[in-house]
Structure formats: structure tokens, C-alpha cells
Length: 246
Image (cartoon, rainbow, N blue to C red):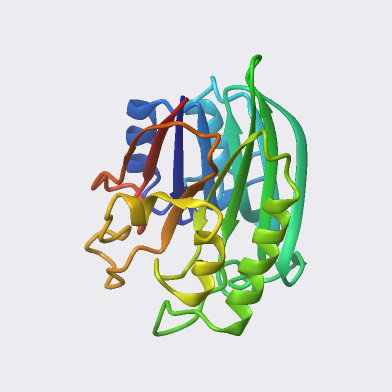
């Protein structure tokens, strides 16, 4: 099975992202900075979710959680996170670690630090996958974190501890933290951080100057990792993370 983690940058490189994803054909797709339009509002920027659904129709199960909405051309555009899956999503949950959804804000400014953990339970027919998707608190100038980000990571760790230990757990996201920050250490203690394990040096393309990894995939001991890669694909201002597992 293949899972891809990607901060899709609100569709700014939507054509390139689509080409990459159509080539890779993931079974599960975890995304941050997802926009979705209403009715006939269609564009790369405002309709990431609609464009993905058309290009990857096999990912017919979806959970989108907004963190903001904004009026546009007499309609409403939403920004948030999404999980798309080839397999049935049987349970959904969201835990906000900072703020709450806002309406009539400026997307990308007013919602920059509205943070939540998105959890979907995916059933493939013979197994259960607990897939968790997160977009972390943004701090200017550094990715070392602070007490706020440590608190958020503790909330996530406590939530993971509440999941049945016999089931698979995969946690992904753009955490806005460096791999060995004190905040991320809270998660590194009980989950395998594949970015650290595989010596990934960056998850940002050259268009960004943050060369430390800030995007991660964590797994528990029930996930058998077949491969983990971070290809240098031009699909966003973040690189995609690809996990193949049993």
C-alpha cells in the first residue's frame, strides 16, 4: 500500500502536483493547505479538492476539515486539510490543538495558526489503518519550536496513546518543526520517525530557504515499512513523502 504526505500549497503548483500524483497513484493521500470551492467556483487555487477528485477518481473516500472560509465571487471558498483514500473511511475525528475554524477571514493570513489533528479510520477489508494528518503551529525565523508546540505534540502523543495498540497508526504532516526539536521529541519517543530513520536532510525544494525537514511520517510498530522516499518533485513549496507499507 502507498501513502503520500504533501502540503499542497493551496494549489499554487496544481498542474505539477496533479502530474506527480497521477503518476504515483497513492492509495491514501494526506494533504495540508487544501482549498475547495462551492458550485461553479473552479480554479487551481480555489478548487484543489475538486481537481484531485477528478484526476484521482479511485480515491473515492474523503474527509475534509476546514480551518477557514472566505467569500469569493458571490460564493464561499474553504481552506483546510484532507485525507483521500481508495479504501472505506469508517470513522472520522478532529482535535483542535490551537484555535477554531473562522469564517470571512483572509485565507493564508487569518488562519495560519489554526491547528488540528485529523484522524480517519480506514478499513481495507482485512486490516484497520489509523491515519492521522496534522499541520503544525508556524513560528517565524526558526523551526525549533517553543512551549506552545511542545504542548501541541503532547496532545497528539496522548491521542495516539488512546488508539488500540493492536492497530496500525500512521501520523503525517507539515509540523513546522525540525526533526530533533524538543517538541518533536515528544512524538519520537513512542513512534518511529521515518525522516530521522532514513536520514532525510530536507523536505523543502530549492524555492524555499528552510533546509531542515519540517514534514514527517511517523509509524507505530504494527506498520511494516517497505520503502520510504522523499523525491525531488516539483509539486509544491514542500516535497512529497512517500511511504509504501504492509
